[in-house]
Length: 386
Image (cartoon, rainbow, N blue to C red; front, side):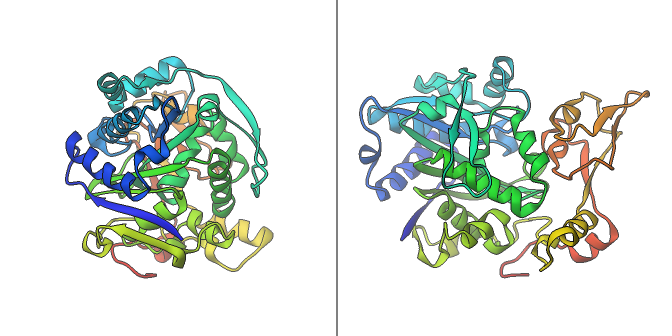
């Protein structure tokens, strides 16, 4: 049995967040049973890009601060470790830490912000696709990883939470290589699962006090949910988060593939704490739940159908400031600046990974759907299978 603990948390006041987290850790046997004196504990938040905490695109600093305080109380040595989107360097990390409130959280607790840029290649024997990978050395060296995700929608993978958050263990622009090589939904889902299995966070917390709906993971709308979710099993934590926002887990590639790989048995997951039915959000806006990857096709035909149905990114030039961030993070390098200084997408090479949409600081990239896609696609605003 996998246990998930769901606790009410009305806002980000540090006392409220700490109280809810204490209850979650008590359900796991108490923080003292997890963290031992002198243990090196890496907190891995979601710091997608330099966004303010109120934008709901990143893990809220109050959650990180509260976890750091509890770990330190148990005698642990805390570091905050993340590789956000884009280049992995000291200047980028400083900008991210400041904008997202992590610098302040570190100042309040004495936790160490990571600036160690070393990586380590590891073998991954439990993997299906990613048998060997490079991860951040500070995560590799930690005695304990606490994975602190943010509940958000995701244009490519429908939802992002605990399992997908460990994609941030991959250094900088090396993430783009995975997007480029694994451009089918299920294959990329298997990649994310493999990375989660390689990094093996022992504790998974999902910041779902305020989540993001709509055009996530960076351009959506904050949505109040009022709970924190915790589990030793990231797949189980994600299952609870999807139940909270009333989405069938089988519509989410990562959870669908995890069940097929027998990494999660939903009927064996127990939700404890607050009754999730009493806090469930019935109208959480989740675009792009319908995908041709669910069709029973194979080989070249499946690839052809996916290319036809896949939406494409489109640059809104009235909002674009030509900063070049989209070109920087584009895996197939299909975006460039034209003679008129406007950004241009070469759709013949576009793999619809939506990295440009995900990392645009001006929300100047939207998702364009063809007619067939618009007919078949719907927005999830209620439960069940649609």
